[in-house]
Image 1: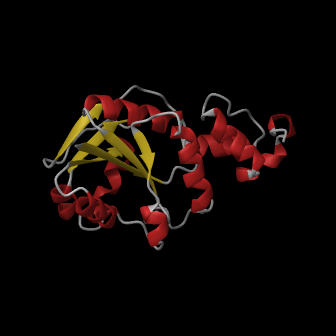
Image 2: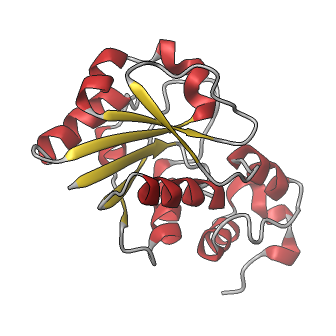
Length: 199
């Protein structure tokens, strides 16, 4: 099988993540694509993320109607800092005879030199860079390949800001995720009374 691994903070997951995943699934001819929410992203130690149990629940809500997507809590169960190399070792053991594709957004390229055991990551999987809007790929590592995804300029940062400011996030995230955010008062969602979900 051809299996894609898509890690991230997903704080929260939004339609940009889903478009990236769907484009990757189609372009790479994958049999399955696995979302892996990080427990503690090593490159965001100075940034507070909401608890991992909320983030993986939102991922599951976002992908529940897509049969070729699934979510893994491997990094959440492992706890500590979420290093991609450890995650890939886990999947390499689980899928010994399958081909792994490790997918990252082009916005991550500037951090690559700080990644733990990057050479090992290249050996464990085919490293794929998905070009995101406003993050042009100027230089691709020789061990990697790139794909062009449907351009949509949206970020988790913007969604969190909109919720905090009481602005609508409808259509920026799947409806189930939007309802979950307001139900659990994430990102200070209680400030927007007009968008709160009625029980």
